[in-house]
Image 1 (cartoon, rainbow, N blue to C red):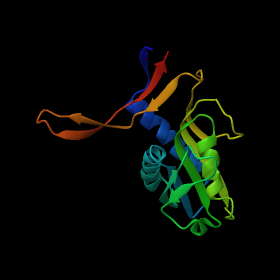
Image 2: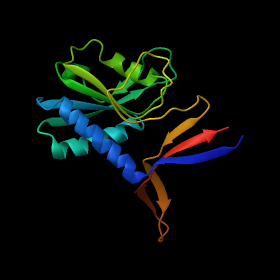
Image 3: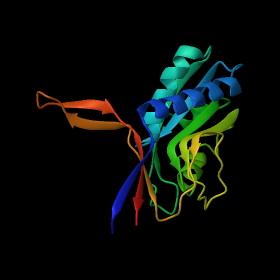
Image 4: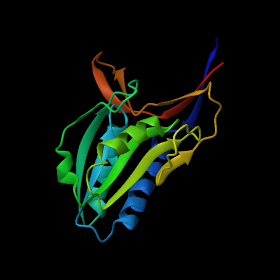
Length: 181
């Protein structure tokens, strides 16, 4: 099995995609007083954090970040949340993940909010791979990427790297499209 990596978006391009998504969220929610940005761990919350930072600068409304951890291998909805789901009542929720592949993760994310009367539920992903097994679409996507099922997409936002002094520093990196043949 050979591994090939193809760079799809560099750091600047990723930030441009996230900026564009933030502006789309602003346009969709301009009259709101508050929106909740729900990032799905482990990588969706990184994108959600970036979206919140941009929205805090450009939007007239308050944005609140919440985290969702979903047990993706389970056949039933099992999640850990850092908020009271009833606090979402009559509010706008933006559910954020890094990659929309089969739709299972976002479908489980929807499940958390099923018993709460939301004002609006929207989805945002950096990459939409178009391989949905669940009837899930995204409202805001950075890039639509048509791939074959055997291929794997890695979103690498933060990478630890040794600097000249030998200590680890955080460096924002790029999105890689990894082909496994």
